Image (cartoon, rainbow, N blue to C red; front, side, top):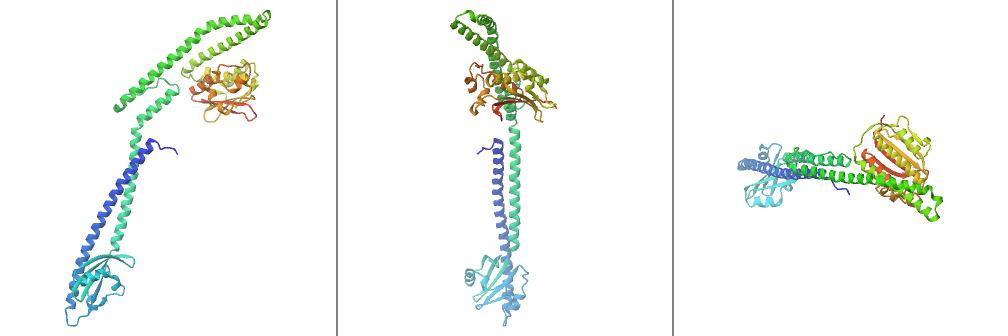
Length: 450
């Protein structure tokens, strides 16, 4: 399971915090509003019931009272419904309510001479029952509908829920905005690190951008400067050593060449030794040349219009191969790249095929339609095993096929140079299987011109 990034976590924290705060405030507001409305409605219902009870008491205080007429004379509107219990009998203005509408406990309290109030549900609707004792044998009840109050509660609840959701969304937006601005310096550091990794060692951070991050910027710049000094020192050391070795190697190569040419004048053991010395000196010379080229890979890329097809043909001719091996897509041979680096890529790929696969069967050049040039060199050799396809581009690493073929001991730097030059262009080098058998080395270089 992938872990959420810092921006996503901070945004989620803001959103959850805002939601919890808004939910707590909404619940508090809802409870306060509910209590306030119910208390107000209860007080109003009690006042109205007491007033109506006084009217009923006055109407019943006659010699021949008409209970039904007394109840009809009450101005209760549609929200209040009167109910009278007298001498064990129940009287109501409508048949909708009766003794079952009044809870027994409330009836007992009123018969004992105590006024009582209770919230109930009748016919699925909320209501408030107010009981007022009129005499030991007479009790007055009034049912007040709370339907409008309940609808008000629902509206308040929906409103508060919508507000809580809006506050949570606002919190998420605020968190995203805050992290975007707070992480901007870290983004600048990441961008600078990417440019440095791509070879732009002149990249630095501006310490004056943010006073709170001056220490980070200064430390980062100091680290880059030390890294550049180390890289430059190592590069200079490798270049100096390689240049110093060239002169004695040339002398040794000349002497070995003389011995090798006069091999027939020596005995068998001396002739064999002379051949081995000549081969090892030649390998040593290739290693020195590759080290010098490797030291030059740190230099900036100098892009120019280059006919890559012509460079591919030159690489083939250098190894005595026909120009017909090169296949180029129409209008896809002119690229905006570093001539020296691309020439080295082609030369090393062709040489790799010659050394370890008997030579290339095809060299293809194309553009992918998005401005990336593609170089593919196919061979029909033993191929590259899956475990070797990543490490084969590392320095001083050779694949298993190189060890399996006699007389093909390379330096282990040819493909490393290919990968280095591709990376300096912002591209990459890979190897896969050729469908017909063998290996297919592929290099992608941004810079293909339309």
